[in-house]
Image (cartoon, rainbow, N blue to C red; front, side, top):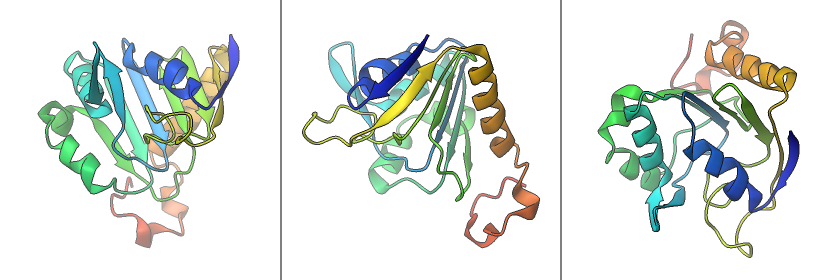
Length: 170
């Protein structure tokens, strides 16, 4: 299966799969803001979903380019499991938007982890987004390898942007 994902399908197709992950969820995003989702007929911060996932033992890695805003940080502080179990790295060069779900499905596209990109914003207020969702093994392997090379700091030693890196990987 390979699908072109656009606009609100980021919420209905990609985010809904992220909420049902069983083992592994890797997220790379340039921008990270407070993002809300529907769960059991209520609206909750996506951080609550991540908190529940890490408490269940799901490996959650979050790779992002800059520190999130104040509302996100305030929500983050409400979920103590995230403090010790969420794996998080900051790299100012990250501009890719990649999501790996259970090493079986990946998303690559334009949407950041924000309400306007992935969240519940109405069709009249959200960003115009586009991406690909696939479970093709070669594509999945390639996306995960790319994510992992950034995560491990493969290019950090030669990086010319170290002065902007407040959370140096290597």
